[in-house]
Length: 403
Picture 1 (cartoon, rainbow, N blue to C red):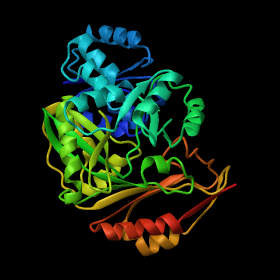
Picture 2: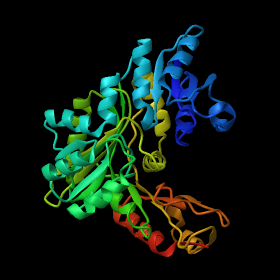
Picture 3: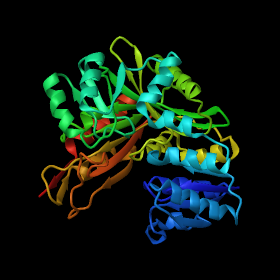
Picture 4: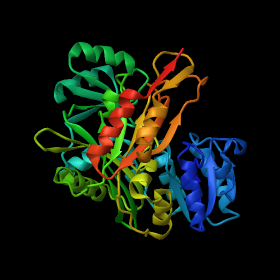
């Protein structure tokens, strides 16, 4: 099987998917923006061919693949990076290949179209309206009501996403989103935020994960002192999660998703109502696949590769609660010291899977631009209260400083 993989070396997580795809026996052909010399060695070692093409130029990509198709049969196209999900669907239609088509891919990329499809399927979505002009944003705000959220219709994560409680704040936000061509204005849902992540093959859900954000992503992006956490939960039979799991499965059915990774976010209000957030036809970012691997003692890179090439994969069971925690240094400039790590590892090290902090002397990352911040810790424990205790210690006792 010859599989075209868009952007096989970026973002960094995709490198592991590239390697896993090759391990199934597939011949992986890479198409990407990076020069071949800039690809990670693990990617170069697992590609049979690479085309360096600007992915933003659809015509150039299609021309490159038409030329390639004269010499080798192309069986499948896969994409794990959200900006190019529609491009992958365009290639499939152009070359008459199996998989998600452009209309379906648009459902996953355009948050307004996505919610309209789910509204028609009876899924509870936030009140919402799309807008392309200043006047339309004000009109949408009147329709939706305060508090509300303004975010790009084709964005990912919490970038360019703002909570708005008053008209005065909306006027401020209008200035901040001038570079965003289309926005979604939607009801702010007060509650806890979770994910529903899956790997699907041949129309069946082969793996499910529920993660819990602490605090919710908008708060993570709003306060520098926060140590953001994503917690993959072991007990999916918890009655408090049942509504979210059921909604996730109905969303996949409504959107016609059959093969690959999905990452959905949803809310649970204080009275137990579950509300859809958004969904992407991709894996979660910020090394959350690694977190799920530690939760299951499995390899979801391999699970995905088998799912998209064979439609099947061995089952994985959550054996642990596992979590990532991202750390942000105090101060600006370069990392000067790290305090508390040795003591924490001495006392809690049996529960720690990964410590990946920026070395002393490294410039700080912009915490507003990347959730990875200045480093991360991954920990796990079979019991959620114990994991939360460990995470609490790392949140308060592990400190990084910059000058």
